[in-house]
Length: 131
Length: 46
Image 1 (tube, rainbow over the protein chains, first blue to last red):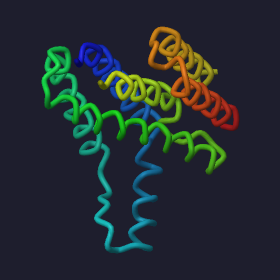
Image 2: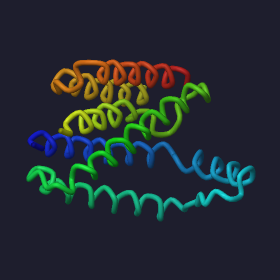
Image 3: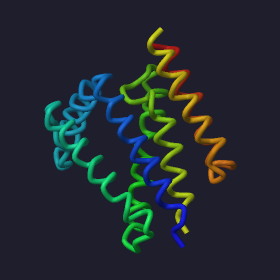
């Protein structure tokens, strides 16, 4: 039932790892933190946090390692992996699209746009692999 | 120069993914192709 989930899950984990490296190398927080401050100034009720580079990168590495660790469950076709794959695929597809739309809107390459097509493709692959 | 090397590398991987994965041989693939085109446009404007 979930034969194709394993390779697609690993592909999206690899794409996420590349994307995190891309964002770290292109100073993603120099865009994210000012954007969050601007949004909070306009909508104070939104609980959006600003983060330091160490906390941000540490958190993303931890999440990426955890997602890689779930690969064996994806290959086994564990029932819980189906909703997890939906969430992972939808969030990452949205992530990739946001980088692309943001770059067009700002008329310059935003941090993370290098790997955006890759993470978008891998996310669609995972979503398409779901039964 | 570096920006184009990175863009070409990612673009190549994206296209390889498109060709290798049958699930991307449709509308989803077109979306990825469009995304790659947008990425190259954004990098070109840097």
